[in-house]
Length: 253
Image (cartoon, rainbow, N blue to C red; front, top):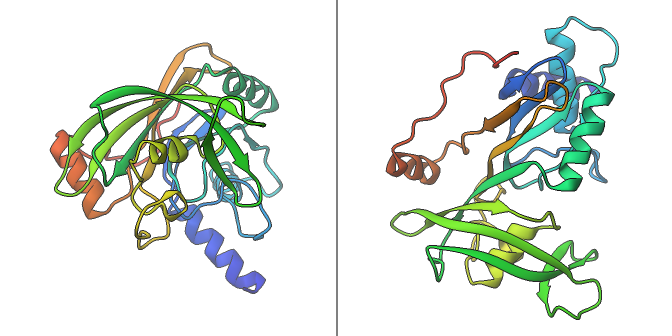
């Protein structure tokens, strides 16, 4: 892709950016399944690039703007991503994520009904960097890290089940690996046992909500993101009696 095409593509993504919350210290956006949060070997434009472009446009800045990546989502996962707009906010947000004081809630569409309607899962996971995959192993296995999450069944559809998952630890591909370990494969997640891919190349795992203390103002914030627009997510929302958020502009503070 030439530089002119790249610029047009970036402009299009800036125009379509879904901002969930914004103030002078942080900005939260709703990541699409195709978005890469931070650069990798593909060289693709990142979500961070898009947010920087948005901030330049909104604030009429010609030069670079500061944007800190406090955490990441896997590329095929959608949902809330937080960025810091100052170095002070980045330092504090990063510390909160390291210490586990940011409460992260996900939604997952799985084909198999879980063995219990609600449970706490504890596995020992080991990452295989060559495969970019994590495996449930015995506690004594080399490199094994204890991994915990809580889930509950929210609704069942004709062929899929919607689980709400709260991460209690932060391991590589944790939700994908732990749900796979109990026989609940996330829709579209071929890497962890799903039989078919999703049409958009993503998986049906969505970072629904983050709750945390504002890194500067010391107030409590909860930021919620709608799942992608498709018939299955739409059916899940309808069965839950929920409507999509109707935002004409980003919440500001």
